[in-house]
Length: 156
Image (cartoon, rainbow, N blue to C red; front, top):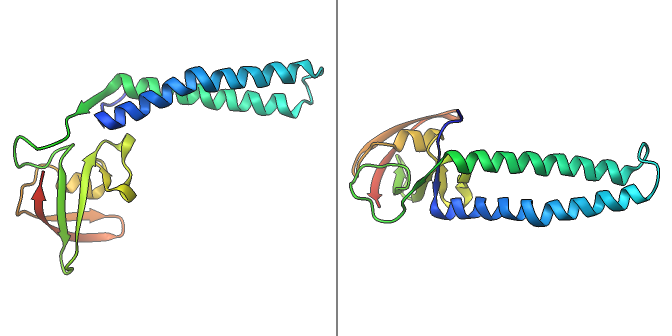
């Protein structure tokens, strides 16, 4: 059985929307392309037919991937935490030791991680290190580029 994936409600909706789009719109577009390519006659050397078949395989693979992901997903609640312990769904403000700037991250499941938008995976070195810590804790992060220390300034 595939491992449980953590998703926010927003992340679940985005993945469900993508799945619905692929099942309806994209499948229909590819079917139309295949139909048009088959009308052209010989399929053995038909580049358009081959391209449409490749896209169909990719789309069907993505549909399967999304179906499994959504079936095994655990939706996490966002918003104020019921306790101060950092968990998936928590938004944390941290400050790297030796710097004056702070960073804000929301810890999410790997499927919807997007560091540019402040969403880090619970499986990333930083996300994994922060889990189960509290406000005021000093946390050692073992990252591929080298270890560093952060202070937890705020947990929401």
